Structure formats: C-alpha cells, structure tokens
Image (cartoon, rainbow, N blue to C red; front, top):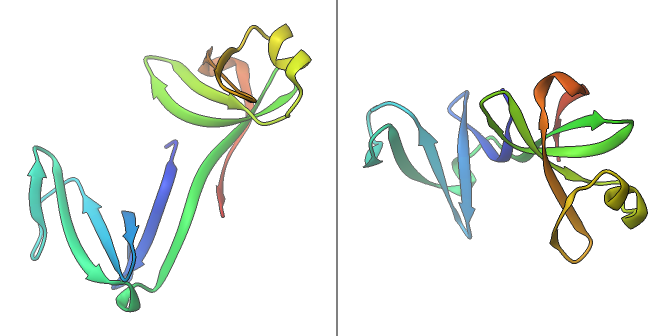
Length: 121
C-alpha cells in the first residue's frame, strides 16, 4: 500500500486523518458507530485531538534510476512520483515535469522503482 498523508491512532486502531486545530477527522471505508457517511465508501468521525494516541504524517518513498522520490499516487501499474534530490539538471535529464518552482514530478512504471518504503514523519 502506498500512503501519503496523515494517520492517527485512536482507541488502538489507525485511521487516515486530517488534523484541524483541536480536533482530528478520522476516516474509514466502511460504516461504524459514530462515523458519518460523507460519500460512498468514505466515513468520517471528528474527535478531540486529546483523545488521539498518535498523529503522524506518513509518506512512501522510493528510488528510480538511482534518484530519491516520494510516491504520490498509484494508477494502473504506474506511480506518480516527485523527485526529492533537489538538482534541476538531474530532473531535466530524467524528463520530469516541472510541477512548481523546484518541484519535479512524473509517472514511472511500478516495476522500475526500488527501495519502496513507508516513512513516518
């Protein structure tokens, strides 16, 4: 599983999360007590931040062509990746798209990446 976003541990279970000041929105794919449907397959519950056992940012990283990347998305055997090496000539040589100033992204085949791992920040 490729993840990029907040997660929270609440009552011993980990959820996708979204912090909002003194509250945390917890998300799950199926109905449960206290969770309200926000769209099909997406349920939310807002809890006080003080009740959350852990809040962390999780990102998936990888290496492609010997360079470091963050995995942003997965689709049909391809990964949307963002270069984190900080060197414009390298990003240009790899034919990455300029997403923003100093931010370079592209789609790469899943089979070409190595060292895929999840990091908690």
